[in-house]
Amino acid sequence: MQSNFIKHTFLFISLSLIMLTNGCNQPVKTEASYFNIDSLITKQAVDLWVFKASLAKEGVINEVERDTVFITPDTTHWKNELDIFSEIGLFNKPAYRTSYEVNDGLRDASSNLTIREFRATEELPVRYVKFFYLDNLQKLRKIEALYQQENALLKTQRKLVMEFSDVYNKNVLTSYSVEGGQKMFAGDSVHFAIKGNIQFN
Image 1: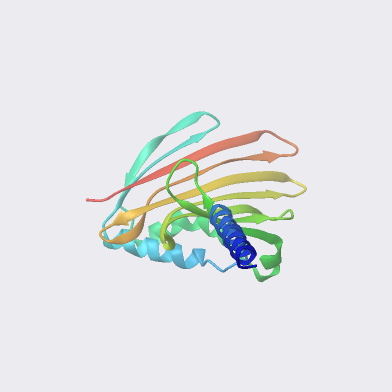
Image 2 (image 1 turned 30 degrees about the vertical axis):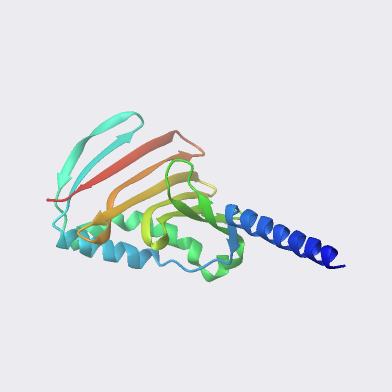
């Protein structure tokens, strides 16, 4: 009798450990949580200005390279430069809260970062947003999003990426890119790529 009890107890503990171990290796599905992209952009604009950061920027349009531009923007210029990333914030619209599947705890195959992913379950302008972080979202290292829009006149697509590092004990934007295309239904298509590298003195 006692031996059966010990056997069942051991079996229960073993199964519990297996379930816990498997649970640690699987991404966690969570409800959509608000992430204020506009506040992030505003804060980055201020920090980059305070740190007197300079911007090296280059672009390609239909395989034609544009000259690299070196500038030292002020807060207003930084906000204007980063304004395109405010498109990412569309996934926060209250009407879309139930239209995204959210997974946290995904592992990035090419780094030691963890990913929280918001992926649209229907045709929305922001198809997905991925937040790459170290330990927690306070140590954000990258944001990646895909924006698509189509109407009777044109179809646009943009992949937006922002990358962050620790600079002067703050989490600060160090590079960004926008790559995509636009196709007019009655005309030619345009492909473009913009890359910005931020430098600190």
